[in-house]
Length: 103
Image 1 (cartoon, rainbow, N blue to C red):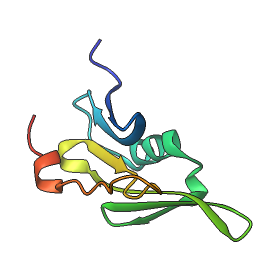
Image 2: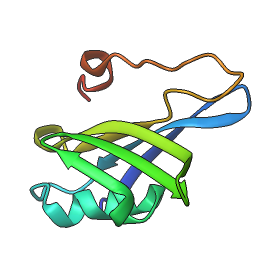
Image 3: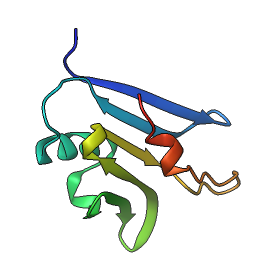
């Protein structure tokens, strides 16, 4: 099948720390694609979208319980979302240029 998405999940110390979504079809990336990808992580209402960059914040009351960040690269039909900081773990800081390279 050529439809759908290639999904890569990156683990660090047995914890999922990043995910890459790559659209497998030749069709143009749309807002619906962006929403579908982001909702795989959490409710769309918890996302802030600023151009190609996205930030996720989930709260219980006033307490932040989860965060993620990343970017959507529509010309390459990709999205990359990662958890930069987990208490007691090494921080993750991906290089966008390296992540966005072809193929």
